[in-house]
Structures are given as C-alpha cells and as structure tokens.
Amino acid sequence: MSPNEYCSRLRKAIGQFEDYGLTESIEFQEEIRAGKQIVIAVKLVLIDHSALIIREFIDAKYKIEKLRYAYQYHAQNGELIFRYDNAAHKPSLGYKEHKHLSNGEIIHAPLPDIFEILDEVLRYL
Image 1 (cartoon, rainbow, N blue to C red):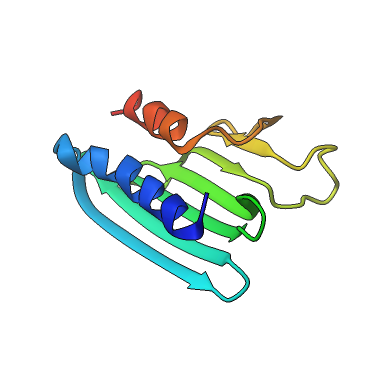
Image 2 (cartoon, rainbow, N blue to C red):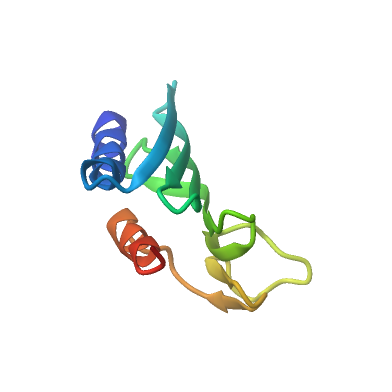
C-alpha cells in the first residue's frame, strides 16, 4: 500500500463518522516525507463532545510500518476512556503494544485496525 493509499483509507474510515452525523469537527493533518515516511495527526470531536486523537509516524518504504502511534479516546471532561500506543514505559511493561484503560490499568494489546478502533468508539456514544 502506498502512502497516499494509506492516508486515503484513514480519511475514508474517519469520514464515516461524518457521513453518519456523529462529528462536531474533524482536523486531519498528513505529511508525506521523503523516503516514504508519513506523519499523521487527527482530532475527531464527536457529537457528545468526546474526542479521538490519532498520532502516527509511519515508514512506508517497503510496507506500512507504524513506528510510533497513539489512538486516544477521551470524554468531554478530558478523562481517558482508552488509549492504544506503543510508547516505551519505565519500568518496562514487557511488551511494546498496549492499551491504557479508563481505570488506569495497562494491558497488552496489539494495535487493532482503524475500523475496529472506530467501532470501539461507537460503543461509547
């Protein structure tokens, strides 16, 4: 998949929320850099004023490889509902890909597909 195809797929997924009238606003920034690197920043504010923040740094030279990512969903008051990310923790978690839960727990969780993340967000609306 090319960088442009990847960005288009992500825009399509997020656009479904707009198509269904579930968004207050969408901010989508993408930068395709030399060497087929992609930087993406998205803020999706939903009708209940909760927000999904997406940050991705991707190497797409040979395949789509998410070097760094965070998908954070929080309530209107800023309380975390969930966050998927691959940031290093100290002390180490023993795994890279993980999910932060609203109760503060961190569990091992491979990154789901963007459509699965959006389905998860829908369950909270």
